[in-house]
Image (cartoon, rainbow, N blue to C red; front, side, top):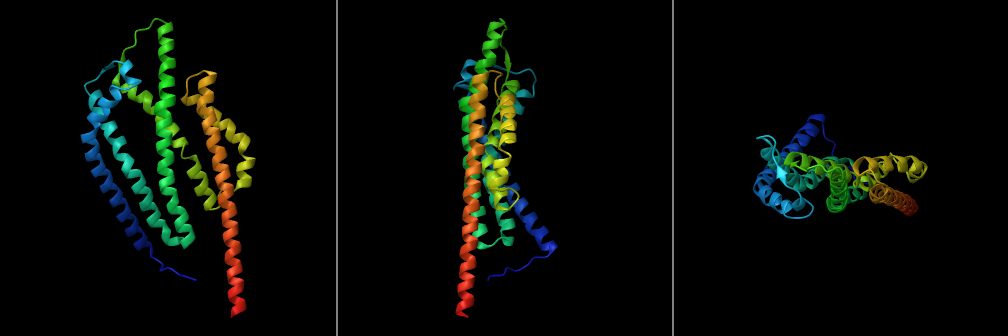
Length: 256
């Protein structure tokens, strides 16, 4: 059996400080790159659907700067979040065995992939659908649509951010299952309550019509079912690994 060197409290604090400084350094470097890329990203968003249908206006001298910085921060988070997850893994892996370290490390690319899928689904499916719905309502009421750039991006972020975070549900469930807080049996028991919560979330971030609700609620429910299946698979793998370890120990004792 392999034992790892223990660390004192001060050594843990120093290690945590080191990880935080590294994440901050990557964020600042990414922020510098984001400031350079932000005008190009804004131009791309402006000339592609659904933004090309909308005239952006500013109602405050600070609106342009606010959006410019918001886009830069979002761009800087794309490389920073995976790096931060890796630093968290490096900080906590000293308390894990070899198998747990490998399992935890696999969460990092899986988390980034789920987040990107959530962003894509929110921007290319839910956001245009929501904008088309609100535009249709305004047209029926003979209202003149004059969008402020801050209001436009605020509306977009209010849809994309919650839905993107919701796509992290499989990662969260797998992690909580891995550390023993959740179990497949508990997930099955909570299914009916989870469905209600997910339907409410879908109603809050989608236009108020049945089709839109279903287009958002069904993927969220599907994510929950995928999470439950993955948790069951991980639970079975863990039991199998424990059984194999027990068998190996018994064999070693017999040989001794």
